[in-house]
Amino acid sequence: MKRVSILMYHGLYSNERELESIDAEDRPYALSTREFRAQLSLLRLHGVPVLDPAALERGHLEQGGVVITFDDGHASNAELALPLLREHAMKAAFFITTGFVGQRPGYCSWEQVRELATNGMLVGGHGHTHRFLSDVSGEELRSELQTSQAQLTQALRRPAAQMSFPGGRFDAQSIAAAQAAGFAVLHGSAVGTLAAQAAAPAGPMPRIAIRPGMTHPIFMAYAQGRATRMVRAQLASQLKGMVKRLIGNERYHQLYARLKG
Image (cartoon, rainbow, N blue to C red; front, side):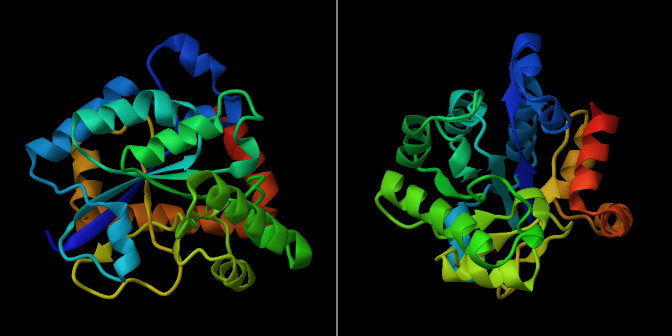
C-alpha cells in the first residue's frame, strides 16, 4: 500500500440500551461493536497494516496502511473498543475531551484514560470543553488548549504529543495555539489520505469519518485509499464546508444532529 488512511471513530455500543444512553447528538457517529469487530477483521483479512499512531510523531510513515483514531473520550473507548483492539493486537489513538473526564455521564474516568495508555494506546487531546476552536480566540483559546494539555500531562505523567480539533474546526490561530500548548501532531476531519514514506503535512492530518451502516466494500475503499472513493468523499466534504461557512459552525452542528437524530 502506498497510502495511509487515518480512520476516525467516536463511541461504540453493544446493545440498544447502550445506544440510547449515548447523547442524541453523538448517536449519528456511534458504531455497534459488531460493525467495529467486522471492520478490524476486514483489515486483517485484506492484509491492511494497522499502524501505531505514535509513528506519526516521526514526521513520516514508513509504510501504507491505516491509523485508527477515536474522538471525544466516550466510556465505550475503554469498555468496548480497547478489548476488541487488544483481541486483534492493534493500536489506536484516543483523543480525550478533558473537561468531560469523570464529569459527564457516559465518558471516561481518569482511571479509564490511564488504562488506555497503559495498554499501549496513544492518548491525546481534544480540547477541554469541546468548543469549536476556530470560534474562540485570545485567552479563551489558550486556556482551552493549555488546560487540556496540563490535565493530560498530569494524568499520564508525560505531555500529550497529538490532538484532534473538536468538530474538525480550526484556523491559523488555533493551529498556532495548539502547537504552543505542546501538541506537535494535529488531526482535523478534512477527507483525505497521506502518502506513505513522505513528509507529514505541516497542518492538521486529514481523516476519514467511519459512520454506522457503512458497507464493507466502501469501508475497504477508504481503508485502502482508493482514489475514486476519496474524490467522491472530498466533493461531499467540500459541500458541507460551504454550508458551514454560510450558517456558522454551531448552527450547522445543531442542524446535523437534528437531521441525523
